Image (tube, rainbow, N blue to C red):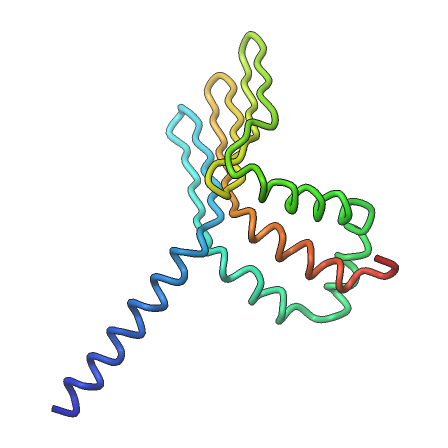
Length: 142
């Protein structure tokens, strides 16, 4: 009976953790070329803020100092997009290339297509807010 209770507790914990990770979303980077090369990277978004907490303070301050000129714009951008969960930001086409930046259901979607290559990047907007707030807290003068 004790083993069953332990197994149930472990299973329930795994289900709750998995649900939380899926709810927070994923950062996805997919790169395909039509010569057979494919790179697909999925990172749970919940890992990024945790990883930023273990980065040495000096390194985080250096990164924040480099990003400081763009942090106010990034923070305003992510705050503003809360009001527009689905919006087309950029859609540029020419004879052979297509670049699109949009949001859909709280996720930033970036796609770039050119003959023979395709790149897709997705990132939850909440993650962008979290990263910009962490960097701003560590940037001098912001």
